[in-house]
Image: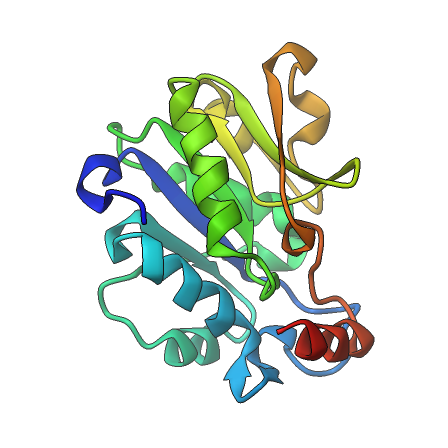
Length: 203
């Protein structure tokens, strides 16, 4: 368990929940159920088991009212991304622009990662803190880079400038990157109905 008081207002967890779910089909993948619980709630419940609600910032856009109702927690902050149709870069930018000056780092978390474990979340944050919030920390599973990623404050201007459907990986200096070995949940997201069925068996 992370000491919530010690890390409160230091690292913001920005959950990206604004996407159109284009690859999934006609339905919003975040509202689909895995073992009687919506995809997004699997992630949010894990985050709330180790972090204070004030540490979370949910970026919403597509079917935003549905997402808010599913999470149903007045203590969590939501930010609406008006440009969500342009892609994930705009959601990252929208989230970063909302951060307080006291924030030393941001953990960027795609909302479609129900298999992500609290163990890996803790491991990633602890490494970031161990490095004095000065390096970019990526999870790695069997040589494959995954999510979430933690970025220090000196990268916030780059993140704010992101546009359309692209992240910041190409703009991160190699010397700033540190990887942490993690489990499969850091590379598993829900893009298709097949992914959803696989997640059911894993969970």
